[in-house]
Image 1 (cartoon, helix red, strand yellow):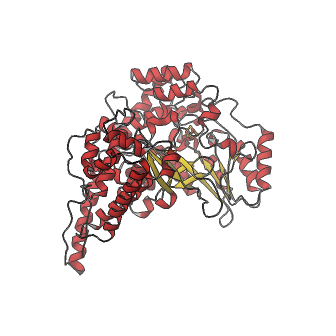
Image 2: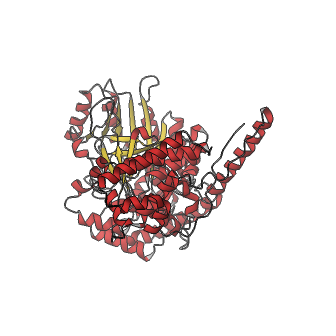
Image 3: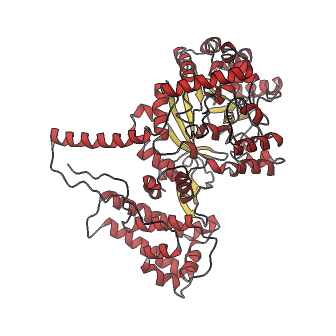
Length: 604
Ligand code: SF4
């Protein structure tokens, strides 16, 4: 048996990402970059050199780790792509002249350390210097049971490492966390002179949504920054809201960081607020990243795929997620005029009836479960009366923000629309972090499942759930809560949500090195990037995108292929990522060791 395993890279030298460091990686290129030859001659020579390394990699004189060879191939491919004239033009950034300036010592203050760091790693990969495969397991002649035992031991070690990471994170099903939250709930009820019966009423929750810093502070302590940001949001009419139930998931100890993801979910950061204010009057144009305006054939309907449409009968929520895709549309938490007018709704449903290609309707908004049971039933009944509708999907975050809304009567009403073999009803929820999981949510989902309603989760992969094995732990908890992981969304390039963004390379790294370790049923989610107008684009394979540039600030530029690329002649989409070095530095600021993430550089 022969095996190689990747282990963590050894500690690297103190990291200063200077041009000197870059040129130490490629001393033999210096002369060429400094030469008097034209850019096009130099480009031709560089591409030839990369090609030569690629060919040598196919027929190496010395035998290296197979995985190191694959990295050589990946880096060569990426370098060839970013040096191509076509891609430089598409990117609007000239890489070769930039490198020539650096080599000649010309001032290029626009080139950031993150830009240099990404190139350094590309060159390291090209020269088999990643450090990822230094601990190669020697060839083994074990066979049969002995080989299996050795392999089993190796797998135990891999899982041990995974659980060591997962044990760093607290989750909401731990007895001490449950106890803490019961105490939070008692404190909130006292503040409102309310009862447990009130607490268990969704209507009471909605009536007591915190819409100001003072109201939230009556339920949970805030830092001065948080208070300031919420005050600014309310003063500028930027949607903000937190249900008492969600507030009870926040820690009251000022030093706690366990609830970081929960607070980040609803408390807007300063740069988000600045963008929202700057685009107060053109929000619809500035923030409609998915270009719903170009994909809505009739009011209240969005269509991006052949067989499914989105129907939006209610466009508000009892709690506002900062990075909400529809922040251009949601004007206020539980806005009084959020319900669609009956005529528009009837026309939208009639439009669905006239389009037999549509087999599934996603009822979303906003959060449609804020509507009364009667309204929901009326909408579902009209959809159920359409012969070609096979599935009705309800998008809601209420299992997390107000699970008491999932009452027996609501569940029974939904269940009446399930006809095995004919029509399915399912719920797609949005749990973001292990700390959000809680016993009330689990009980609500159980009620749905017992009634024959399947429940799925859409995870938005943000900075706040992207530490090593953080999302893997969430997937395990979701499955134990009878929820199937469905999609993991890469954060979109919305300027106002840059605090939440995670590089594409981290999403791929997570799915390869963390999610992959879980049993198949716990990692049923597909990682996707939402392309404006066209919709979800898988990101697990190079078949779906190309790296075409590394921009001066270190962000990678990808060319995404449309999902229907072999069916219809659609345009590709160019999306800018967030710089890997900046992401790693932010992780360092919250106590992570960037070396634990070192292989991120070698995903493209
Ligand atoms: S629950 Fe969904 S629609 Fe509502 S604010 Fe959050 S992301 Fe937006």
